Image (cartoon, rainbow, N blue to C red; front, side, top):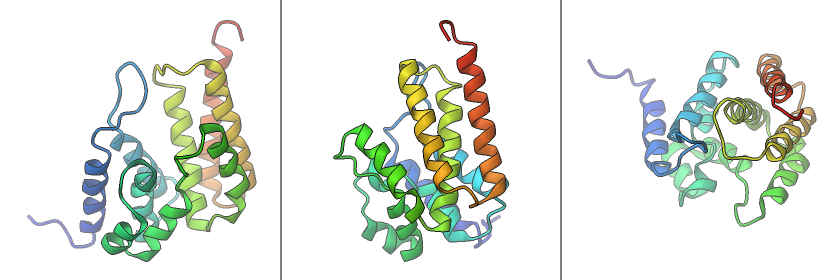
Length: 186
């Protein structure tokens, strides 16, 4: 049975993202394929965010592709349309900059994000927090805490975007704080 035409763009985006991120893994002792993160973010956008806009869903699948591969804004525009490419571009960090500078720029630029990019940013931060505090990463505790604080600073800049996604983010933060409180020397 052929796939319904309405689902084809999503499977095309997932296939494209899987190919572009094929050598990337999430950090940890048993690294997960990076595509898992993209699926988790897009699933949250659909299930928690009740999102039906195809451009936002596609952008959630592709949100890291420009910064993590040789895919360009133009490539995305040609494959998935200008709206998707523009949303992804809003969420793209300049990987030539040092880590701390990129994180500071995310805070500084948060209020300039479109409503679509804000939703994805919230879901992305929640997903990352869950992964950082669930999987055995080789990150020092200070880096985990810094990521958590940075994420809070970003989401605090864009609160009022989407209540359900923000509640999921807040639950992720509570989970992280619980994990930290159970860590020896805390």
